Length: 80
Image (cartoon, rainbow, N blue to C red; front, top):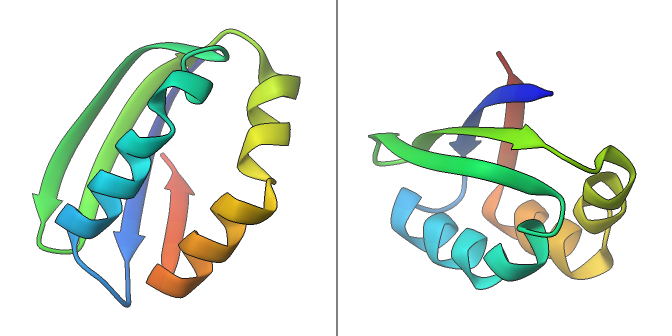
């Protein structure tokens, strides 16, 4: 399943979010492929990818570490 998401970072910057996002790329790579990140502005990004394991990606996205960091940065994700 191909997905495009718009990410808005309300309490931080694109660069800070991107560094965090890259920090768990290996884990995400178990569940997605062809991932591309595009900077839209100082606090927005577009991420596109193909999901290969929805259950695994959902579990990873719901992990405490990721949820806490995203909450701290004020991350809002909109599927386009």
